[in-house]
Image (cartoon, rainbow, N blue to C red; front, side, top):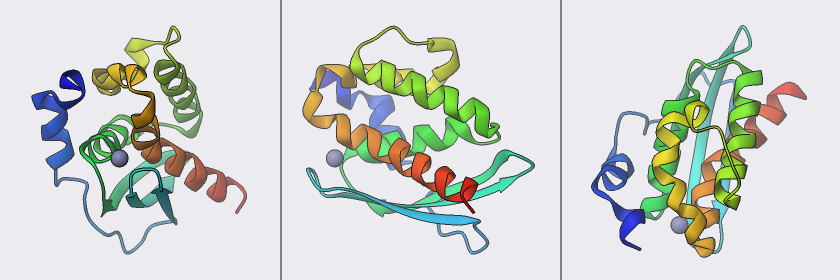
Length: 140
Ligand code: ZN
């Protein structure tokens, strides 16, 4: 498991910058990974087709917490279309398929997750929750 707990990933897991409640979020979505007990509550604010603000509350393992911070850092300010592309590449990355490393940027530091199938749900929790939140927004 060494590669999953590199210093930079542990630092991301401890990051406090995005860990807060948001009172004026457009959508609040909760995500749970029962296999590990990870829980996040994601606050999303969208303006002019872009994710303007994102924050979260919750608890969970290092993988889920680091992944949530990396996800927020990556998609903040991005258009909903770009996020769709990013999501597709995140899925390819965890499956061990070819993916666009330039597009995923910081997120690719966790590409070794593909070698730990039992932790993929921890990693994907933030992304699935974001996907659900954006779907909820688009459906009004
Ligand atoms: Zn976990």
